[in-house]
Structures are given as structure tokens and as C-alpha cells.
Image (cartoon, rainbow, N blue to C red; front, side, top):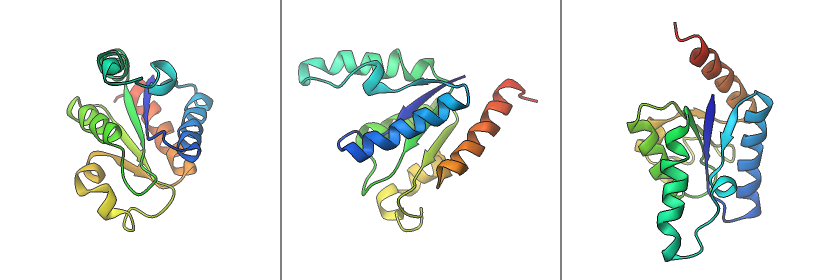
Length: 141
């Protein structure tokens, strides 16, 4: 099972939480696709097609599920798009928000994003949700 990990990368803290999600997935035996690791960051407008193809056509389209890091004052535009795309494809989507409750972050998250993901509020909760996802993936009945 392969998981796409979406999240902002503007600060060391944002990169760290994406890394924690990746480590948790690896510890559960999941293959991961992490866009900045596997494709890189766009160097400029001239690089958009390469990054889009790598992140979406080669990355997200090859995954079985998406995990979106939703910490912070807003959801990154790319993360929001990736959630919507994965949801439209019928892919299981999990959001993780550890910095405040979903109720406290409601105005920043939007009902559309909240309604598109199963929400975890801790790494422990995410671990349990991923175990259930793995079980359902390999034993769909």
C-alpha cells in the first residue's frame, strides 16, 4: 500500500511534521510518496509542468491513500488541491491536525476540507486509523 503525504514545507516545523507522518507510515510497512523528497521543489514558473507531472501524474495517481498535514493557520493551496483531487478519485483521505482542535481551527480549515478527510488529532490516533486502513485495504470484505 502506497500513501501520498501532503503538507506545507515553508518552515522547519512544517517539514518536521511531514517527516513524522512519513516515519509513522514506514514503521507500519507502508510505501510513501513525499512530493518534495520524490520530485523536488519548483525552481520557478518554468518548472511547474515538471513538478505537477511528478507530484500528481507520477505521484498521487500511483498512491492508494492520502494523508494531509493540516497544522497551521491555513491549509496550503497545494495540500487543499491534493485533498480534493484524491477525494474525487475515491481515494481514502486522512487529515492530521495536532496543533489545535478541529473546532478551534474551523475557520481556517473550511467545512469542505473537514468533510473530505477522516480527521486525526494525534499521531497515536493517526496510527490507529492507518492500521484500520491497511486492514481494509488487504481484507476489503
